[in-house]
Figure 1 (tube, rainbow, N blue to C red):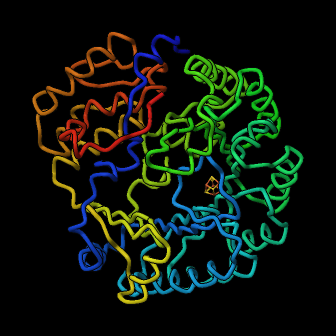
Figure 2: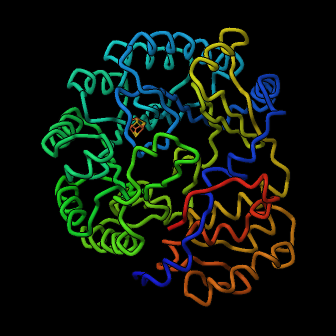
Length: 456
Ligand code: SF4
């Protein structure tokens, strides 16, 4: 089921991606190191697994579209110094955590985790394994920049227990790559992809991007054909968010080189057509996977969940996140570290942790998070299940939200009756718009209102 351009246009509006609820712009500075330390101590529950995240903020060069928290540098000494503080933060958290808790997931993101030399990859992974209790079948994943990667680094990752990799591709068109300062020929991508397969990685994801300068429908058709030929297990196709007022380096992208709205929308249709024809399932929120993939199975079994790393099968895990800008999460709170590496290192050096912002959820936040996550992951929700979990009358509690959904119902994006709300096949493209109906923070006073990327 594909949208027409009028529908995509109608629902293209700024909106959160709901990797958390409330979204990160609502985190406040009255939550710091003391609160996070106390929360770790009080939230220990040996039955609750852990998901670990490690942020490596360094990159060799700057991609002009980048929206990540990163530092472009050629000085490896910066990483060496950073790793020392990262390990200190890991030690501080591990010392407070119940050692019996199983780590079911570890993800290294960035920046570029493969900025690290092979010996540092091994050293950091060993440091984590010595301090936490990794499950034998833990998902251990890493974000990879194919440029400059060596086979030795891939071997170091595999020998350190990594079994999943996510390769940044974006587009294979040379003109597009030049315009965003990220040159990586298809032959390089193929070679690196082959290394991960040969080393026995069980799942490979490729990240693509639409809305980049000089992209055309024909050009993107060629990119998709080559990507499908590589046969990755998962694909994420993100839309470029041009927010130069937030990310100053995006001013290096010439605005007039960006594809117009109609082209972007036509690309959305092309992506759906091509990937569905190739046998991928559209999970939602720009993510696709093969039908036998765990994410697809979890979605069918209604156990899929969403967190700062995107979709996950680990619904009940607390997240302990390490490194600059990283965000930890328990049942009740979010805690975010200082974003700048030098500021992060200073705080860890002085206090062992680096939390500068956070949020303690109210009961209303938890109810809304539950509803939004169910809709975005399960693509349906049972009103009775929410009522019994939270002791509310769904239709009364969410009377405003249900009214806000009416136009989306009329457009065939959701179906709602006395028992259920269901996202239609078409509605999978509009999950953010559907979720926004349940967001109590969207009507924040104008001067404080965060500026989000567009939903389409
Ligand atoms: S490699 Fe990734 S994190 Fe680094 S500049 Fe490029 S897009 Fe940003």
